[in-house]
Length: 546
Ligand code: SIN
Image 1 (spheres, helix red, strand yellow):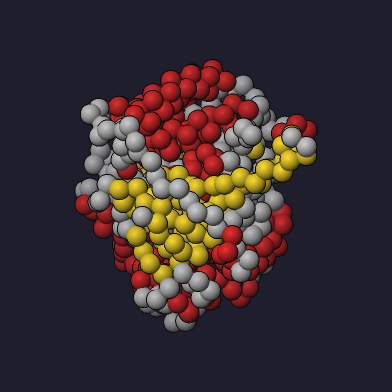
Image 2 (cartoon, rainbow, N blue to C red):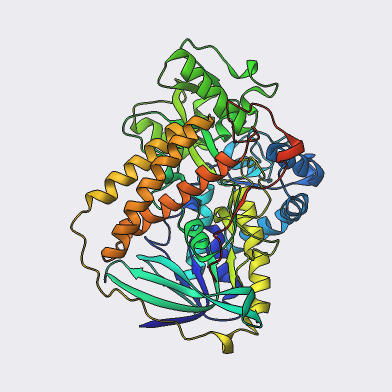
């Protein structure tokens, strides 16, 4: 059975939903999401959206400088300028849609000031984070979801997981030799998880907005859906991917046996929280002049070093010097969650460890979100637009998603005008010769193994030897997955394992390629940044077989 739309959106975070709302004015939109619409990285984003507010003494130049400094020489300055300058417009748009950002008098009732309460996070030289208490992403996701659900041109397919993109190739011949080719995307095969049936979705434009790949690592702040689906599907289809070695580890995730993936926002340090060791001593001042508000790569490496040298299980984040009433207003969600684990953040330090948080690399795009495959776009964490360089500045990602959703939607609505007539008929999914799986253990075992060796060998501190070990292991696992994939009917677990394995392999390859340390990539053999040879993106693309 074939499903047709003008725009196919894969993923339902801020990027996918914003793009859907904007393109729905010009055509039919199908949104596919593998769980329910609200399950996305966006929903878990605590910090907020970095945007310049001139009345608070900030400037676009300062935000640009902070982003470039954090990116450690690899940002694309043009992209940085576009995103930073787009901030105020997109904050206004979100407010008009109904997003409620915290105001000063929400947080401190004595402050009779009707203006937004701007937060500060690591690497920012000014307060510029628009937030909604400590649940900014959830507030944005709810508002966008409401609009999308009520739009007559948008159809949402929940519990539908994309298997692969559908592409076709136009080969250009000179005599009998193929001299060049052009790839086009015309939709995706999608597994309806409840009906256990693969459906064909044909579309004029396809958008990858599936978020990141934190689940490639044993410890992550990401939700279960973060399995690198867009990156893996894009790469398999022939899209170029870039800079996957730059995996951002968030310095402070709650350390507690029952606390799965719980992030303690950087905003806590922005409000005066400090990192301390087992004996209560601050350690960040010895690593960086900005101490606890240094960039994330610096803080995560410092904690890693403290843990390795002391043998402790965690360090601590202490904000207990602030009034309990302030903490309850500013961090209602964190306070409640910590209390469920018996930790009162207003009275005692919170045990924390770093965890995989954000992919700075992804599917390579231009400044309109276009990939090298015609009619295929990628935005949000799935994409590598050039904004983050070697290390994303905190709270720049929701802003990037909003700006690029807008730019991609503008470009896609122009492009769609010339497409509809030329979408080829797409073949249906063929599962001849496959049977139901009898060995689910292959999926769970390999996933566990990948997450563990990625954490140990491709984590915060890397070495050539560790990367070689990881490479050897992923090759064996990839072989097993391939054999299994072609023999059995697809399930969502198998699709996710296949995607996480491809993404892990790409991260390892990018990390092994870069023979220097820069931003989030730190290799003990090459401890310095080397601008002469390595001030460039690491780009990978599957070879074309004509
Ligand atoms: C946080 O609240 O610390 C996360 C913000 C971000 O990753 O940008």
